[in-house]
Image (cartoon, rainbow, N blue to C red; front, side, top):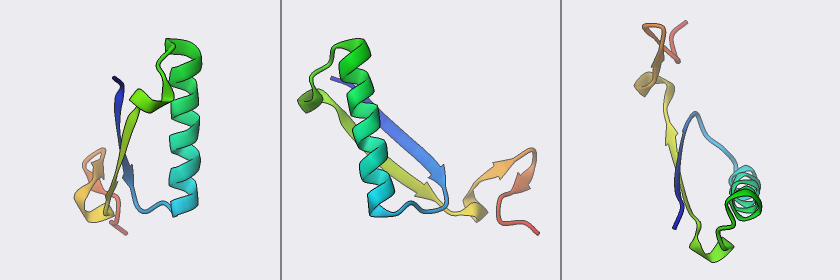
Length: 61
């Protein structure tokens, strides 16, 4: 059973999440032969103040 956890800086719309979930589920079915009903996906939207790259918070000026 595939479990995919997506962490993303900022927010996605419901439509964006639905499309991403569809694409990932389809890919796992096509390439890994996993039934769609076995695929679980979670989205974690992280605020910029809680995510840093190269030592800088994403919400830094």
